[in-house]
Length: 418
Image 1: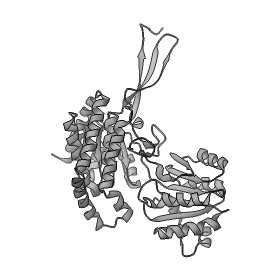
Image 2: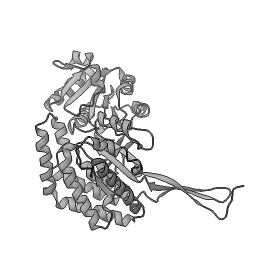
Image 3: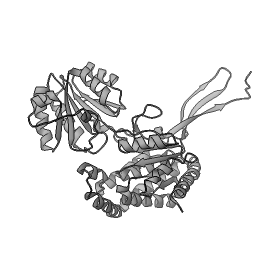
Image 4: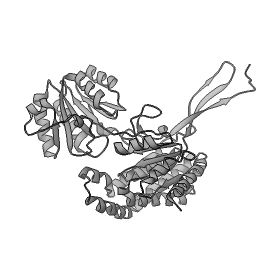
């Protein structure tokens, strides 16, 4: 069977399974999710065995340590995957919920009911935990899912997918609820994007080139998980200790993820005091700083930033640094160079915090907290399907509600329109 036909069959099975899922009870879905979580915990060694195959292949490549970290699974991360699935099982089922209901003067009672989208196609790169997170969220929201992971994590994805399929079979749900395109052929994504007869929505998770390619080629509506050029602005009224801790956490904890800080903006009023201290701490953490002219005057042996650095999502131990003229300068910089993902201000001036929260047009805007909290689990959603930087339908961490649409239900008593 050729590749295009194989992918068509996966998509077709997903469409058929979505009809079954749309009628499945909350209890049946939650039971399947709990079985998935339990089976992941019981097969940690198997998952790690296959993950090591992927790690061995990429170590010889030029992937950064941060990207290899995104690919790596250990017992702790697998347990986190299982815990996320259990958390999704405990969340309220969005399907069938009535958002609101009202009565018209003619006696008609109109309600707005949450319904699944249908079949979701998810195209992602190196993080194998996406396989479990997305499968769980789609199942809970009564959507079938077709997954296409990156070639670098193929062994890990297949292992996780096999466990999830085993759980579906055990609980009597159609195996087509979760489909995986296993081919490493680049044409696989193009074929998947043509399946508009079966797939209702595509969500790409990955680098800029992948997302642009998906948006350009897809016949199916796309919600973009765009790059994360995230900023932290340290205001002149910032608490120094808070600012240092937030900046270190935002950049260093996991530099290879989309909610890590890529550009540090510092108010010129405190740059002379703050920059030497943060530079000292970042150096200990192995961070390379690339600074503007003003930064270079305050810090020795710092690489000069280029114009392209302000738009760069490094996903690595590299940080762009710029001195700005107060909050207006910070907002202007973010407006010009940001990717509408996650941005933060550190300040003790509440009026400035409110100004920043109101005027920065990003999916998630923080006052006195790290951008690393932009995450479905951290927001209390159980897990996430991605971080949408779009404005239509969904924005920010996408979870259960964002995987539903709605329909209007109308109760009458013989009314006819005159």
